[in-house]
Length: 295
Length: 242
Image 1 (tube, rainbow over the protein chains, first blue to last red):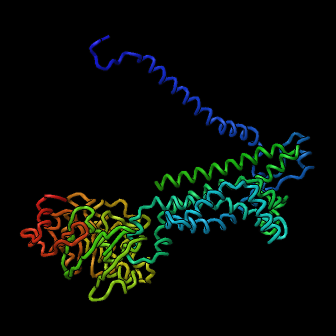
Image 2 (cartoon, each protein chain N blue to C red):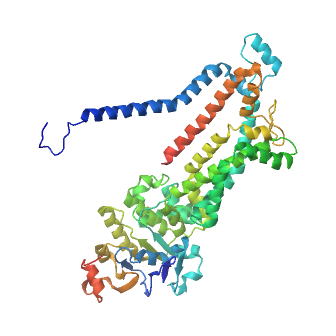
Image 3 (cartoon, rainbow over the protein chains, first blue to last red):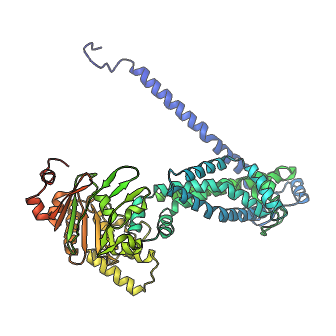
């Protein structure tokens, strides 16, 4: 060892390298633990659910108990599918989006335009609180407002309203964040051309932030599409395909719950869950793609 | 007088006649209020809350506060520091944006004529004539800035306000834009904010020197650069501060 050296590099260097490797090891281990649930879930769903996935699964309604029991006894795959659930889910999510998107985008733009103002801050806080309201409570509210008040019975509309309320805070915040990311120079450019305020928003700001808005909308849809509790209280479920928004309607997560409660239909639990997960993953991937292109 | 929020004024006591068909440069160190003054001329400051103004600005003897902003900004166009073409629109749509966004219903051949003549005026037509329907983001910074000038020219305004239009550009693009401005002054009145003294000396006919929100001196550019009447102007021009 050189006693004249100001900085001694050999001292302790083995111990430091060891520490560094140890930490790297811990990080790798923890990240494996983090991703393992999703991989295990996928493995479980695919291994148990894939055998039920066939054209009938998408285009036929759920089997009745007798059909299912016969199939199980003969060791065949279960007949029928979840067409009533898929159609109901698509109907209700589309209706919820129709209700939530215009309202949320207007509020999101309002929040962006009124940064730091008291009323806007209040709305932002309330929006955050709304995001924390348990979905089953929203289901109860929709039950009172829509099931009892409007449709006088369980209905797809009531389910849609509950889902729409869940979507509101998600789209509002993503709209505000998207608008904040747009350069102010675009807005000034339009204003300098004498374009009135509402047209700056409608024809310049919204198109410029379109991919950001789209990402927020897709993520909010993927967030609510698997909701079960509010639908139990509002749409009840249906064994047939129903497209009347005033009637009880099925949905994929509701069907999973029904299949779970019927010992003969366990196989359909796995395939329906696989379908739902696949749908949500696809929406997420599309949203990621759009936002990547945007950045 | 122009003031932000509760602060005292950012610009005060400015009285000046802007000459027609000439380039008037507004010079001064950062924060002296030159951009603030420029933005008051087409009322851009009204986009932001809490800005107070006092006083009068007239265009051809008519108060700008009595006109609608739409009408005013058709007469007084603006070009910004950084090129800001609309990202979602093609080159063609950018040039015609002032008409389209204001909902005027022009026929296709009228639009074509406006786009072509505006792009000709900024010397961009030959460079982009084959890609009019592409988005403007493949253009160089200088080309984008000329596109933005074309967008402002499309309305045939009387006055064009330019807020340091070359400060984000390389020397070659800057030279092109300066040549363009000298050509454009035959048809338009140009007010140019710049912190580049040599640019003001090269292309402007008249110059204002602002300092700490006040108009210190306003004179022919030649006179100001050779024989300034205020010691502060002399100090700035000779590089003692700023």
